[in-house]
Every structure is written in C-alpha cells, then in structure tokens.
Length: 202
Image (cartoon, rainbow, N blue to C red):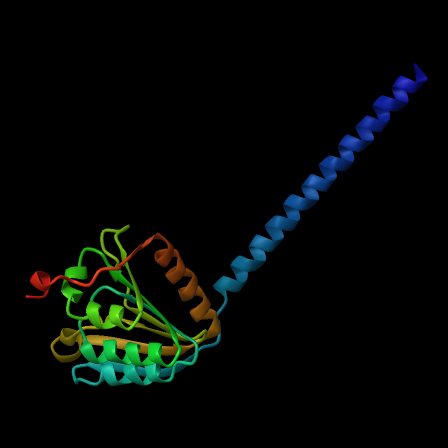
C-alpha cells in the first residue's frame, strides 16, 4: 500500500513537472512572437536612392540604371510589362549571369505579348499569377537590399502618358519582406513556357 502511494505521488510530481515545462514552453513562444512583432512594428533604417514622377518622362532610365547595376538577382512583379527598353535591360542582366525572374498578372498577360518572346528567348523565367482578382504589384527587387515600387507599371503608357511615381529604396529589411512576398506569389504562379503564336502577335 505504501508503494502504491509513493507511485501515485511520483506520478503526480511527474505530471506537475510536465505541466510546468509546457507552461514554460508556451510563455517562451509567446515572448518570441511578441519580440518579432515589436521588431516589425519599429522603424527600420532605409536610404532613399531616388524618386521619380511622370510626367516628365525619365522613370524608365532610373529603373534601367538599377537593373544594369544588379550583381546577383532581379525579382519583378508586374501588372503590365510592355516597355521594350526595360525588357532589354533584363536580358542584358541575364546574359551577364544575373538571376532574373518575373511574375505577371495572368488576366492581363495578353497585353505583354510583344515583350514575352524577348524575355523567354533570353532564358528569363516568367510566371503568371492567377490566384487573385488581379496581381497588381509593381515591384523590382535588386539583389538583397534595393526595393523599387510605386504606381508605375513597366509600360510605355506609364512612361509617356500617365501620371505615375517610383521610389527606389535601399533597405535589407524591406528587401527581405518584399522578397518573402515575391516568393509566395512565385510559388503559386504558373510557368510560362510557350511564346505567343503568330496570330496572337498580330
């Protein structure tokens, strides 16, 4: 009978120890989450490299400067991409060994039919994102620290006809956040493998 009591007591002690351990683990997890949320909420250092407005024209030249200066990678999210000079800059980057990838909006992809052959022929991987009402991002990520964003679509209309804005920022923190978001869209997008047919080119 004494042995049984000791056994039950030891079981009770073991159970309490496990409970304390579980509570400690939960508190540690909550502390980690709270710390990460506080880091995200706090201001992060960033250097504004350039700001462009159209009109006047000139935003494209600023983008090309950043593309030509890339050392490792260029990640693009585009609602519209019809600017030949920007496509040619991406091709130059690809040819010098830069990793280049582009996500386009699936529903407006037909508008990009003149540019797609240039990119695909150079070996640039293009994917179409059809998981949303529209994929409306206008973003370029240069290497691991430069973010280009704004209202500016990568189109001739944005450069010559529309009122648009571009901001170019150097921030490892912002680049990481944008790169994580880019990968989310990249992973659920469909790879574009076929060049538009002659009929589609018109």
